[in-house]
Amino acid sequence: MISISEIQKIFKGRITLNEPLARFTTFRIGGVADYFVEPVDIDDVVNIVKYAADHGIPHYVMGNGSNILISDEGIRGVVINLETGFNYLKHENDMIISGAGVKIAKFVDYCIQNLYAGVEMLAGIPATVGGALIMNAGAYGGETADHVMEVKVIRNGKLRTLSKEDCGFVYRNSNLKNTVILEAAFKLPIGNKEEISQKRKELIMNRNQAQPVEVPNAGCMFKNPKDNKAAILIDQCGLKGTKFGGAMVSTKHANFIVNFDNATAQDVIELVKIVKNTVQQKTGIDLEMEVKLIGFEEVTI
Image: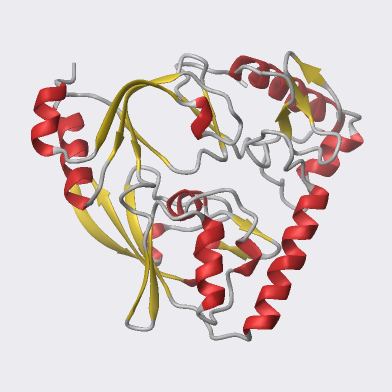
């Protein structure tokens, strides 16, 4: 059990009890967090992580709330949101330092304004820098990890600086899941501002035309199998428009499940099962989820 009075002695940021989480996610789905904390600096993060560990209380770091599905029961323990205290960008030794709470759109804009290229293809990704690093989010041939030099994290209660190699970046994954990412350093090539800006504009237009950005969703639901595309497989199986409760396979992009009518997390889970089972039966391919399930005790998909 958490003692708020005890935490307030070691924590300067905001603490909220029973905070509804749906509004913090791009899916607009999810129950409440027992404790929702917004640290203002590294000491706050170190202290709240240590407090939780010492008292056997689980903690979860939430970024922009994309690429996740939170259970209808919410998240037990402490949810840490870094957007308040870690929303900074700066230059340091020819590198760009980004706080984990910076939204990718802001990060890309900062890079372009300072004549740096190489991240413009990430502009439409609805994530924070921290969340994008954990998932090694990518688009149009580029990945978040491409220009990373080092990442500052809390791992096993200790502050550490990891090299790019230490982070274990692979396709849509890394070994950063059991860390709290605080900031990252990127080294980027110099580019032409007009050319980079135009490329970003074109990529965002393409993304908006191809994806259901106007409806709440968590991003691509499944990873692309080797030498194939999840969206093509789902489309070929005739699953576009398939519904369960308030959840639907997007008619615009088959690898998106959208919250079209106050969907619950369970609606999404049941629809995922339908999609996976149908694709498995018709193609022999087992789709692997890209969206992460948070707060579920046991889910068999």
